[in-house]
Length: 435
Image 1 (cartoon, one colour):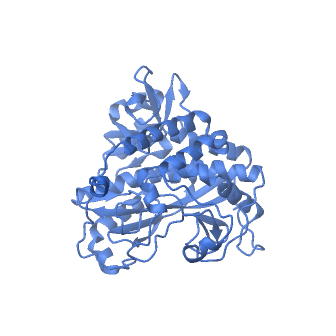
Image 2 (cartoon, one colour; image 1 turned 45 degrees about the vertical axis):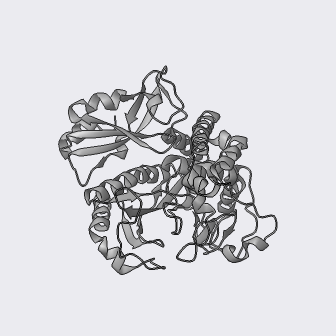
Image 3 (cartoon, helix red, strand yellow; image 1 turned 90 degrees about the vertical axis):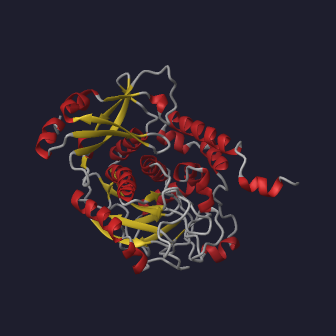
């Protein structure tokens, strides 16, 4: 073992460890393990019943074991006697291929074999709301264009700075915090890193934000569209591909107008080509499609795409090229599974490089005003059902992430869709009770 967690526990005065994994729906599952037992857990893993989580298992399946990754260790800044660990899932001594972190690690291995290393950053937007989630927590936050509102930001100074201070302490390199485009909405940015590191931090960030908000008597939500009249929660990803040493950006090309290499355009071509089957991964809930296909919001724009397009430094497109050597994927929302988000990007991108896919012509237009004029432009799915069906029909994602994972994911999401479809809503009663 490169790192002995039992020794680290003594050095850092950690009394308990949260041995954690994320299921296919992105739910964070954990066991709280006393430091005295961490040596055994590091060797053998912590036991879980897979059927009890959103994994395609039955009660007849044996225990699966979450083997912690010591490199992922995070000591909780607000409760330093507890250490958090991301884990990989095993059953009968074999990695569970339908587990999200394993899926991402498989993509990383494929990329490494080709001499590539993906680095990413994510922009996690969230709302601070009241305990039952029906209203934003700040009744003074009422501007129609509240983005960057200093007063609203500073009224939540205690929460925001506690989260930011925690990220500084953890060495994540946070560099800005802002009030976002919706009332009650915030975003906090930290440095990009290897995609597995970013995914682990993304998982922990969501937990940390919720916990610190709760400690302040508030509730944080990453729900894609919690309020119909306000901008939804995106989770934009900034992507670049490097050599395996991590010291050369393979997306950068000073001679290109946009500062992108041929490999960058091929990678982007893979995203554009496969995005329809990726949408159920990037936008995984019924609510997600109320963000993508939303009408104009209170601020004047949804800031989310509904078509498959890319442009320069233009936020009306699904893909933005804000700077040389990277691009920003703006489709994902706050419900996306952090590991499947990264695995989907890398899998589609590698397909693009392998097949030298052309992303098509860049569109230098305002998609919100002129998008309807573009002939042959692919539209994103209108709802979760359509998105799941596109994932089921697709081949690239099954090849990249494995049929076992995709079949399990689609089966569980389809069950969720059917549950939603069988629910009678207030809207239906109001509009059809007297039909």
